[in-house]
Image 1 (cartoon, helix red, strand yellow):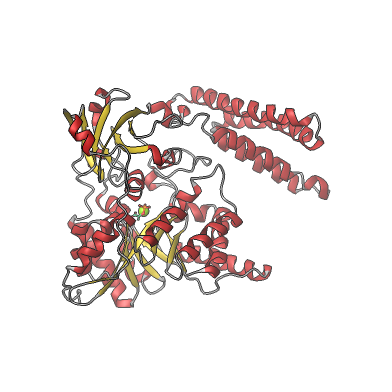
Image 2 (cartoon, rainbow, N blue to C red):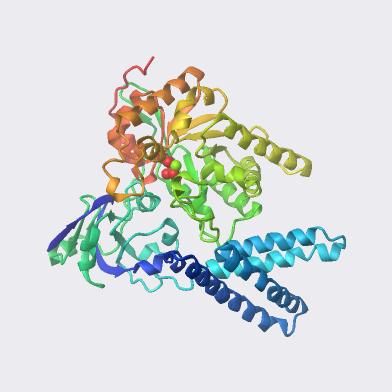
Length: 533
Ligand code: PEP
Ligand code: MG
């Protein structure tokens, strides 16, 4: 038996056969090119492949359908414009298609003739087909994964996991990766044992070999003996512990235990495991599942279903927080030097109000069917919060005019996950509906330590005095104004943090749903000292 040590990121021990994913399978090959002319050529080739796919499809139908014949002509007309964007303006293929679509639709919008003006729908349809062809991975690298596999890879993105058949997956071992990454959060949510930052030692393991992933100790065991393999089941079994009873401290204080979720399935699981509500629905994971932005009705349906599943328990819907490691497969933001400091969270939503409004309208309408709360991510100023509220008010007015039922009194809370929001907690507390502290990002931004970087693992420490002082400041501001404050970052799921958070005056935690029983158990052993005066 040989042991390779990494970092334990999601608990559980499991034996299974190694299934290797090469770096190329999880990376867009266009990303690997640095010279801009190579990049342009690669993007042009990428576009031409998609163009040919759509062209062939339309040509087949064009023979006996005039609409498709017209679409084929439009597609041919768009080709040159898109290629100019790629070659002369250095756009990636998806952005080039999107820009061209907007340009041409704007031209059509100025036409007086109603019939011609309505042709912009055809342009949008064709461009969407091109984008779908550009973004759909031609091959699912996990398609042939046998049952009981342990995935070995350099790294994985949250969107990669959407292609994995979880019923066949035993565990994951990564060369890189980080404990605070969204991939690690997804693994924990789904009870998939995960060891990361294993390093080059992972290359020693051959495809198909029996190995053990020990997500408790952070070890990979190669050539395990038969007794160990027999002890561990080949297939991951999700420990279905539930704990529906409230968590009451020894001295009689009820601490609400909510759960974090990224899908309808997560919401269902969390409620059945004993969550008293959903403290964070990461809507970006829902957006990642499609090949285009979900429209208002699609979002309305999913949020309503989640709300109904919660019965009357609160469902906290966080507006889109894409950027950094959470990229949408069908939408590329222009390359950023420092994505974690770039266009993400509320900045993205305010920069693209059309996308933001679709989501807000869907949430407002769904809130008629349950106890929905709305939350904005990455707030850094009072102005940002107010601007987001103005967009929300506009949506309410629109829905009112259209006569559509919606929740008139929905008022939003915010994530506290930037140092700016900590410093402004006393200005934000009186105006927001609630605070939810995101210790994952707060730790990264307070300590200037990348949460995605395995080499800074020990440094990305939510127990660092500077992070604790930040939490103290927020809890104090919330207390002065009677504003609700909870914690939804991973720190809330760590039983070692429970006494600290309770002593700061925090009375609500939103945790990974699998940790509901252990956090409730820990709470029940606490005696709360008087909170800070
Ligand atoms: C956080 O930053 O702590 C948080 C809960 O948000 P996310 O992990 O989705 O960035
Ligand atoms: Mg965050």
